[in-house]
Image 1 (cartoon, helix red, strand yellow):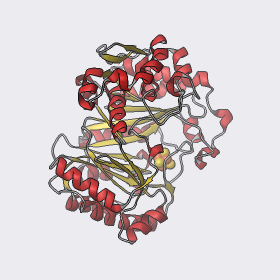
Image 2 (cartoon, helix red, strand yellow; image 1 turned 135 degrees about the horizontal axis):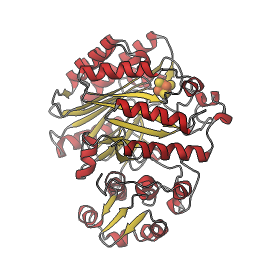
Image 3 (cartoon, helix red, strand yellow; image 1 turned 180 degrees about the vertical axis):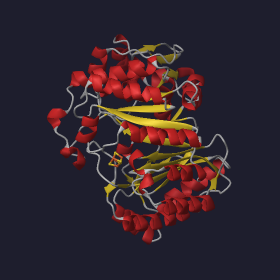
Image 4 (cartoon, helix red, strand yellow; image 1 turned 30 degrees about the horizontal axis):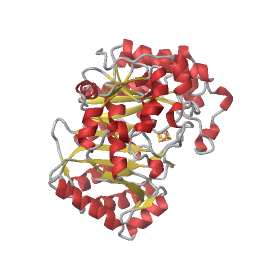
Length: 465
Ligand code: SF4
């Protein structure tokens, strides 16, 4: 592993600085999406974007909110149902939204990245998935280029081999499986029972079909998890060798997420155990050859994410890390977030409002924010922290037309505490995250977030770990 990718786990610093905070899949973050967005603003942003970057590729995110049963740790925007008629109605509106949004973009712009997320996209009957892809293909320019990035989230409990082959036939070349933990007691505690054999069957079938990349999502901090049990889960995962892994920390917020009230809080691991689960994950995965990409993500060195990390071309969008540069993102479906030029926009969060807007012939965009000049400068700095682990001060000055030390005088002052604690090394030319700092990159990024309170990253807040 190259020195720019090495990470070092310091329990004391992780505890002190492992605070809650934004994941910086955007800047400003969704918390700042408080402007009402009218259709004409979206249209204007799309028209400017088409003109400014004619034929620049597009990205698409499509949200399917339905799930067959609730996982008790879940904090997603989802609807638990077994009623397929609800899905029929939703898809009808979704098809109309695709047609409406498609009108705003030059059809010459190739869709080089597409992600279906949820909820559970594979909740939809196969026929409905075909209809959606067909409508997308009519309104946008989908591609079969080898370097396209078309991914879909799969619940291993409700996909068969034919379903996998269909997804490949529809153009998806990447899949993501929700695994979380293989321990039977943990699975029962979170109401998501999917034995190792179930996941292995889907994984083997997907490999045989030839999906370019397979991702597993794991979660640490779930009820009844122990270091020994999670070590066994990690061993199984390493043996299967998915190309990418996301290892998320469970955030227990039952006041916000009703499903989480089903969990027994006394069964949650204590802070010390949580910390040991995270350390275990980092140690085992890096020892097995996985590269730490950043913010809970790992990839095999052969994977495009690891290569992009190495050559400094990694990017970050609402779907996490990506190899595709800052593309306009067309968002489709209830609660979906997109970006067009300087405009971030989010659809209505409730099914009723979303469907009513479309039935009225309106875009279902509800709120968002238009980035100002300061946002764009800070976005560049935060991007460099989250993706490269280093801020190239000379480059930021050239791109943004600022004197870094003047513009960010307060932030540089605040960084001194992080530097004294060994998270960053600041020189006139760069801010370099140390191997310890790379595991706390969002703490460093928070220093540059103008929307956070004055204490920001220098004063440890509630824990992330
Ligand atoms: S974790 Fe995924 S499958 Fe489970 S309830 Fe949430 S969105 Fe649905």
